[in-house]
Length: 322
Image (cartoon, rainbow, N blue to C red):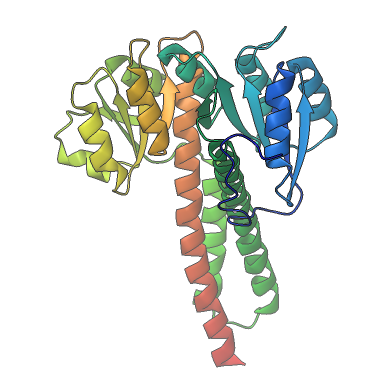
């Protein structure tokens, strides 16, 4: 029997890593059954359905999970708390929140806990669930690829240094310098410039966390040069500014207040903006953590590029002298 709204389109497209593991948490057996039957048709997914957060935590202690899909309202521990705890146990895990009762507060809470996407139920089209899971797997794969690439570049540098002892001294010095810079960059995760639009409180919080941060008006040309731009939804021009910056070099963090419009938040999620809820008890921790993660990613990418260039120069010097 076909599932509601299931047409079969897109089967076989966008396959992820073999045996990617998806944990489904919902206390409604009918919802679990539909989701399991839908995702179970994907040959490269292993699906674990459970009816409570407590069952999910037990499984998370024993299994690597790639994507957690959880209902917001669960008996006992709720979905928001589950996502927070799951991300603590498995930091690489991607989390998607499902709820039948959407509100700005629930979206903000889900993202503050570590969710990266949001689905409303009942689903108008069940393919949305599959697409969201696929997108989450792609994000996780990209993070793992970046981390493994960093390790491989460092390994190549060490091997070349050992193999190329007779290379010219300038090439040795350049490679050793970039290797030290690379290792230092990985340790110093807060390097980079941060600009804030529309929130003096966010500026204060980030300065207390020892970030290089400046508050700027939405029309400032300096925004284009910042590594990370934090835009508060209370600023009347936030949407135009965020859309403009989205196509540039800066990472954009949308800082959503408690009165943020739900449709705006859902649009921001669709545009893949990083979303942080503010005005909550843990806001002083969530915003700095998000900014720190973005700066670390940027720093590692830049250091990798410099180290790769030094590796190429070193290889050429070995080829010339051999």
